[in-house]
Amino acid sequence: MPLYIAVGRMLLGLTALLAPGLVTSALVGSDSDRPSVRYLARLIGARDLVLGAILLRATQTGEGVVPALWFGIASDVIDTKLSFLSRRGLTPWGRRLAMTAGLAYAATGAAQAVARRADPGNGAGAGRQT
Image (tube, rainbow, N blue to C red; front, side):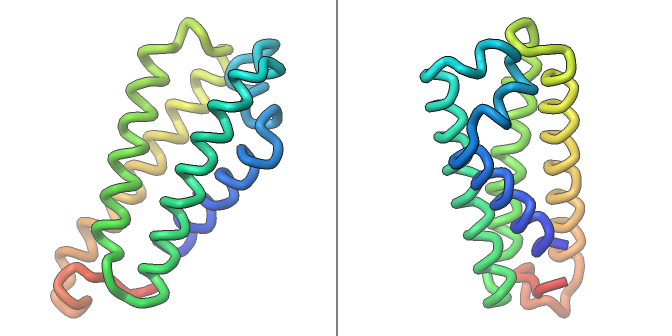
């Protein structure tokens, strides 16, 4: 499962980097064409690309999967909270999308991190690819 989280995060990151309007149009509607909005989308995309690459590397080596998951979880929880605080600036669809995606990624990551910590055969929480 961490492999799928890593790939999903990297795909979202690449999309935001290469086609920021595609990501931002659902979130902010007509403001998605503003250069500042595209810039911020690319920043977030770069962050998700890096978090995904770190998690992907961890799944390949079997070391550091749990910490990589928790860094992603922290990012997703912050994103969800910020989406809630900024809800008036988002489209109705964008608000639901941002909050649902953030919660889903955080919950999936947390479930994987907890399961890996509870499994004594995985190298003290280091994790292994699934």
